[in-house]
Image (cartoon, rainbow, N blue to C red; front, side):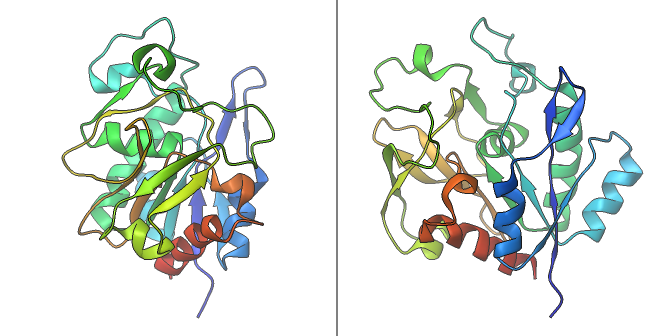
Amino acid sequence: MEKPLVGVLPLYDSEKESYWMLPGYMKGIEDAGGIPIMLPLTTDGEAILRLANTLDGFLFTGGHDINPKLYGEEIGDKCGEICVARDTMEAKLFKQVIELDKPALGICRGLQLFNVLLGGTLYQDIPTQLSHSHIKHKQKPPYTEPVHNVYIAKNTLLYHILQTDTLKVNSYHHQGIQTISEQLESAATAEDGLIEAVVMPNRKFTLAVQWHPEFNYEFDDDNFKLFVEFVRACK
């Protein structure tokens, strides 16, 4: 069987006006048996439709904060840098991916994006809006080190993949799910109740996690399984 082609959404450096990529996103797919292809940030509807039809799956990467206007809020003081090009392109692509039922894996921003585009809302800044939390959601380097536990819901795709109800994860985010979309199911939560993974029921493979498997999959079997099962679904 041919290796599947997996579209990977690029990160964007506004100062250099350039696309860039963390190697773990690409290498994770390669090591799991897929061929990663970094996508352009295009608003061309015909191009996006062709990408959605042609490629076998899509990895929605981490990065910028999502524009709060997408979930009906004004941009607050604690909201970080926004990338309109990413928000626009990823919204159009995700719509096509869902309609075609192509496998989709979201990481960090990817989880937040899935939730917002399906009608959910976010905390613009966890430290100020979830002030009771004692969890370290935005750790300092090295990002390979796990810093808190997540508790995985049984009878979910994530539990089926990992076969465990507890996982210690790394964490580097200051935004997160406040209200979950009615089209998603929570698949994991942190000790403070913050949703750390979601799945979209009745889809081939639509899964997103708040942590960063691209940093430690090489020596963490559980995080490597996420790439392996995603690539397998793309086949």
